[in-house]
Image 1 (cartoon, chains in turn purple, red):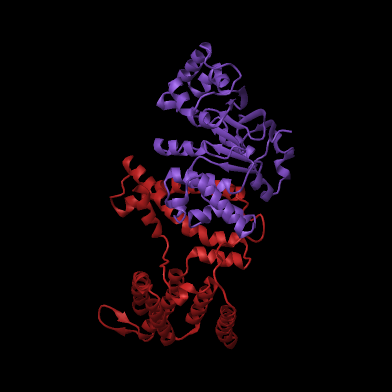
Image 2 (cartoon, rainbow over the protein chains, first blue to last red):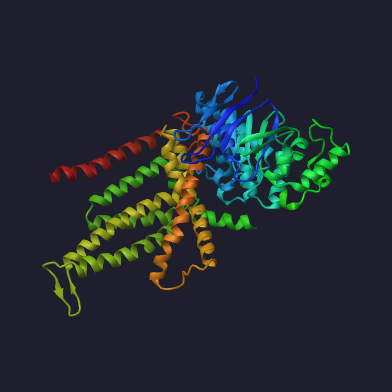
Length: 283
Length: 264
């Protein structure tokens, strides 16, 4: 059984004519690293919220379909179970802060404390999360005084302290300056190997850094599902993401036998960007 | 550098001043009960009594090392209130004992009443200042969690203190963005009042959007999943402090209750 499954999910916002998600189906296996690429306003955040179990809520419901984890629909999960199973990190760093913590330590400990875990267990989780996200030197700082990159690292640490099986990253670098983005990407590459990650992105670079399987969300449907080269060389990739240069470069590499079809991306992030000559504008 | 200056700015939203005094070391609930007792006393004591209460609170604040900050806040807040009370009750409201001094008519009864209200507000404010300058909100939250107070109550205490700084930063950013697009905020008061909705609308819209996001984050972090939370580094409490609080609460109830019963 797949860890996370999306079954024919169709969703529209109240009073909207067009469906944001129109029969989306895919599954994510344990330990997989999946990137879902889509243009701006392509439904990434909505899908991310469905994946993370934040939807449906009291107001917003699916027209059809549902999302399940371990075979159980999200609506059947208790809040404590769900938050221990999956975590969501959104786009705007300051909006990821709980507003309940006066220090970085308290922000990370907030979730485990809500689970009423023993104090020693909370401390161990905070300690581990701070190490993974390189936050030890900021432990006593007020979360709202951190830079955007630091805040995003903090929200990832807070998510990791919940010991989730799945981490949903919704454009985690989109609000960061280039330097903070590079730091965060380097940090993301160090995340525990057993963690299942789904990253929703418009930019290629964070996806290349994290994922080995790529989905193209095009007009509310999954248009492509496969290794990076499948997405990069798909004709709709150009129209939806405007990645002409990347697609052409991808085709050239494929034609030259650089990438065998069906293989996961065999390059490091730096190599991939250099080889593909990714223009700064689309990174 | 940037985050360093932001850190300094962040500290301004809290009035807490670190220290080693008895009030600093007391359990936050004890400090809270002392504050509530002082407020209840200020509500029933005569003017001389509230004046003594204000002086006592100032003396304690000096001894605990938070005097300068507290007295400064007291003066900044009470000066306009004092002036307004004198003008309204001493000069503007007509009373039988008014003495005509040519340009103005002064009422000694009105001034007495103004002084009574002034001292009452000053005592209540000083009690509050003594509490917020010696008790860190984080410790207060821990004490509430330790007592099994629902997590939502703690959130109501913490979130305004924590979110005021980013909210204020956003207001400044919106103001600057509107100014570079031609909004005139340097003209007359009328022009500024007209500009107010243009500044407020995006601020309110963004605040509502933040609210939605924050609700998701809190839900994702299992907020209110269980009635009690784990407390890390719980504040020290003792049997003496527990009994002290109980007695002080009883005194406060009697202080307020007896005059009420007498009145009816």
